[in-house]
Image (cartoon, rainbow, N blue to C red; front, side, top):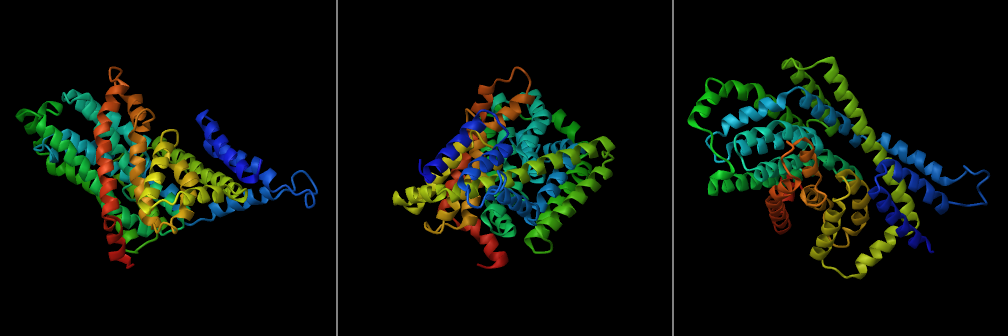
Length: 451
């Protein structure tokens, strides 16, 4: 076998191994070192079995990840999300938004979607958002006689918004991978992110208007009970503090008042203060938040170490060149290249999480972007939209499985799949709009920072 063929075998073996359930980050490291030992084997300079350049590469990649200033924001944003989650702010937020939207058709679904979007923005962790909202809002909608599939679709679709709307952890990881500005990427994702959330809202209100049986309106007695002297109090004590925290963090980043890492530090401190304000900060909750932050951050960092080692060996063996020559040899137009790339990323979203896709597979496409005159910022936002579909598409819709894990026993997985399908059409509409109107991604960063 030639070196490029070995590189393709390496990639195929990796996909097969992770489908068998092995830990992805350590699989990357092991395969990178194993195949790298072969790639860098030089008997003339190796004085011992460990005198191979792959070990130097592994150490250098580890140092590069640890010294990356952009990645400092990851644990800080994660801590903000985890501490907010454990401070019981989300249940207050859901109830206050439910009161505020009480006159709209499908008011509880609208409140759940808005809560998902805001909470997903604070955490950026799909599993956490879908699971928590599945425990909080999903049973409440079922008790209000909402259609099971309709309610499930709202929770799953809303929970995925956190990988698109800033301050998204995914966008930070993509920026570090693509070597572009996190600040510009955040600005570029604002309009597409809220556009998708708006499309979801339009669908929810439209369906509830056309078919009121899907989302029955609360009775007048329920409305009076909900609003009796509590609207202003609930909004002031739940929505505005969390919204102010998130907007302050985003504003500091977008207007250049702080770097993403500095703003993330302020967000983490703000989340801690909110937990104290709500008298929800206990030693146990603080310990859990710190532990989960450390665990998730370690996973992301080891993914970077493993993927950069894997990618370096893959490229050294000629894998990148082989794939690039193959794709360029197809003589695709820019639109066909984007469609092909998005189909591949969509399919990869079935067995993989967004972190593995961004760190491992997106770099395969990045060197081809200049040839097709595709801006990496635009490409990144298109990928972030695409990953919404990966988490919602059967049979491997991870958001549906997260919800099924906490849903009442009578809720069938097929009902959840049925509920998420209409939201997929909203994502596709958003992707078509973004491609035909690229100014949706470029206008805000160009306005703030110039072209």
